[in-house]
Image 1 (cartoon, rainbow, N blue to C red):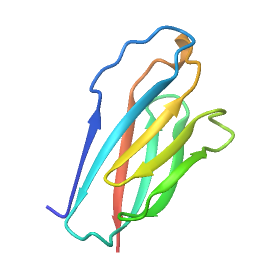
Image 2: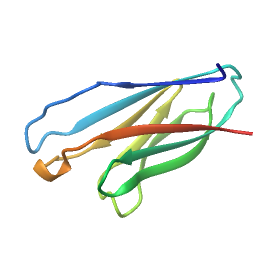
Image 3: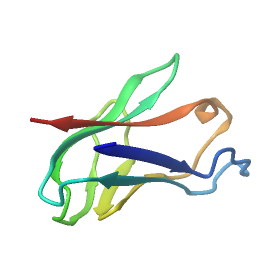
Length: 103
């Protein structure tokens, strides 16, 4: 297809205070594609971080909105990394990388 998204790791267990990096790999048919990327935490805060990006253009580490203090997103094609610093027990949950191909 035109877009394929895979997420790593599938499951992760960490210790309180650790920094966690969640990765999302994106494959597109068109190397100049415009994408909308959202990292979503299911059942809690909703969208943690969202951005529009060009598939082939790296995006350095940048902070996400205030609803997710300290959380940062980086894009190094074809991989996005969501970094969560000093996780605590209440950070547990399902995190999803959602990518939309914009036309």
